[in-house]
Length: 33
Image 1 (spheres, rainbow, N blue to C red):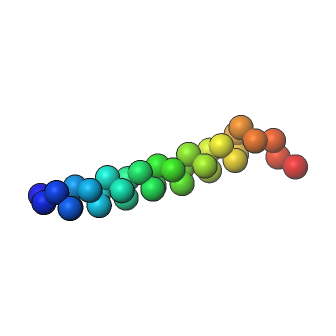
Image 2: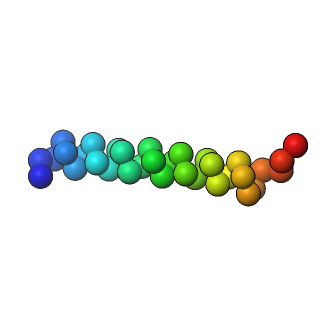
Protein backbone atom coordinates (compact mmCIF):
# COMPACT_ATOMS: atom_id res chain seq x y z
CA UNK A 1 0.00 0.00 0.00
CA UNK A 2 1.08 3.55 -0.65
CA UNK A 3 1.31 6.09 2.14
CA UNK A 4 -1.58 8.06 0.68
CA UNK A 5 -3.77 4.93 0.66
CA UNK A 6 -3.01 4.34 4.33
CA UNK A 7 -3.74 7.97 5.17
CA UNK A 8 -7.08 7.95 3.36
CA UNK A 9 -8.04 4.67 5.02
CA UNK A 10 -7.24 6.10 8.47
CA UNK A 11 -9.24 9.23 7.63
CA UNK A 12 -12.23 7.11 6.58
CA UNK A 13 -12.07 5.01 9.75
CA UNK A 14 -11.80 8.10 11.95
CA UNK A 15 -14.73 9.86 10.29
CA UNK A 16 -16.88 6.71 10.58
CA UNK A 17 -15.85 6.34 14.23
CA UNK A 18 -16.71 9.98 14.99
CA UNK A 19 -20.16 9.54 13.40
CA UNK A 20 -20.75 6.46 15.58
CA UNK A 21 -19.39 8.33 18.64
CA UNK A 22 -21.72 11.31 18.17
CA UNK A 23 -24.66 8.98 17.57
CA UNK A 24 -23.92 7.15 20.82
CA UNK A 25 -23.51 10.44 22.70
CA UNK A 26 -26.82 11.74 21.42
CA UNK A 27 -28.70 8.54 22.19
CA UNK A 28 -27.29 7.54 25.57
CA UNK A 29 -25.53 10.48 27.22
CA UNK A 30 -27.59 13.53 26.29
CA UNK A 31 -31.12 13.56 27.74
CA UNK A 32 -34.00 13.09 25.32
CA UNK A 33 -36.47 15.93 25.21
